[in-house]
Length: 291
Image 1: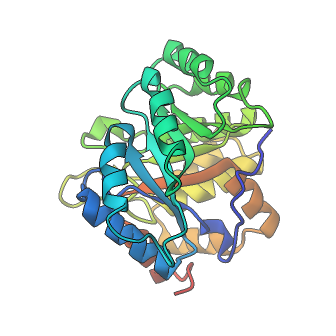
Image 2 (image 1 turned 60 degrees about the vertical axis):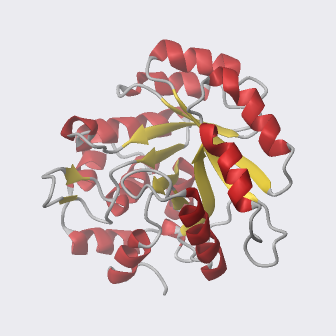
Image 3 (image 1 turned 135 degrees about the vertical axis):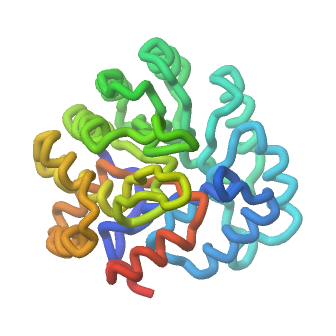
């Protein structure tokens, strides 16, 4: 069963708190100082489309703590930095990372993203994470059969979710609309929330003129979640994921009811973006975001 992570959707609800700050990661690859400065500026601006959660590799927590302490945080300096940790140090390093963050009142750990490239790795991760309180999103193998295992680990005291990679530096890292639709529908079927990463550089599905890669759009992905949460089959979800018709997608987004928004965003929680301005600019250009 899908349960709320605690975020309060607000206008415009379909895109509220959708974008996690992944400025440290490619292709942006900001320095720690640059990424945190941008994050502070975003926190001050308070865009409703941003989750205001900062993504950082576990291996860089020490660097983050040092840089964050150099100057006050957002507003009056009392608000902790809301963190999403990418666990690049292995499951054995999770306890140390959790303890280091817990010991620093300037930081607040909200979620951990764990790579688990095989069904066996998913099982091992779920076993290792038993009793771990912050939200955890597992990035499992591309075939979505493993999502069912995550469902059995969901308990009222904590959240377990799935993570999907929507692109990367090679064409083969971009899942097809059908493959992505199968993942989304599997998450809905088993009551597992998901988040996404990589390749979502625009609102609408498009071809990058420099690389030739066809990128998924974040608006397509949100509408795919709307359809899946309404019980649509994989093929109907795949159709909206494959659409390059911006006006049609905008019209569908504007027709989504409040109940459908809530169901969709309980399913699709957020995606990591190395740019925090491009998603807002694209949404605003489509008339979907108050600016």
